[in-house]
Image 1 (cartoon, helix red, strand yellow):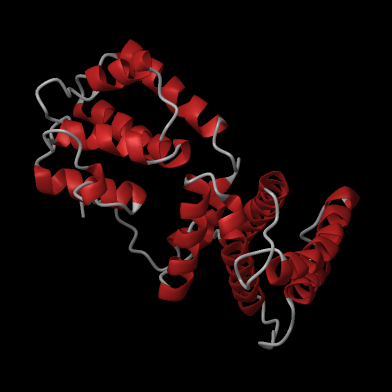
Image 2: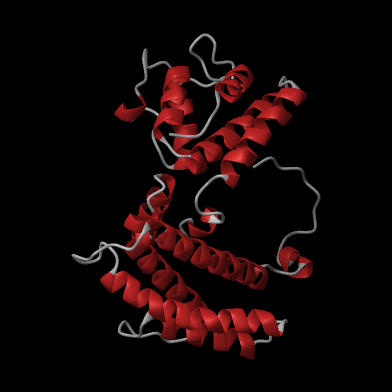
Length: 271
């Protein structure tokens, strides 16, 4: 359940026009499509069937069933949509955005968005969803083995993009070591401290192999405690977020490259 106060719920309900069972300008179909696009969940899942089952009550059901991070994601998207409709009270919008910020800050894993799926690979998407679900339920212990799989898949993908060969039997920390070497060789690490942090993460990932094999649901193990599992999640999501940003900057074309090959026109074509 999301940590929403009575006052916060009333503010959100006013902004989203939920008094008559509606939510903004959505029909049943468009509301479902919007929620799926924003969160990967269907608002017409049986678990959200709260009271009358109206759109407004299903949104209330979503708040009751999901954790802070996922609720913040949906509420933030709904606030954007309310603003785009053009008649939202600016003071109420500002008030509701503060609710989103608070929910995000109280999420157990700070940089959870770094663990979103990458590309259109089905297997990667399944793993990413499993990891995020564990976080949304505030149960990082359950997600440790999936987190290991996610990080391994992600690093293999990064290495592949840089022409680094990684065999299936190469362990996670060795893959990361190869990647850090490539970063250094390419001159993409500016500060000595950044290099030290990344090098220390090699030994962290080596230890993560042990946690995955002996302290997670990967096998019939005695599970790691909540606080230690949360520490592991937060450390690794910070590393993944940094790598994502590094790769984003590397792949972003220069302004000259962006216009290369396009006709020199100024036609305002809306599609």
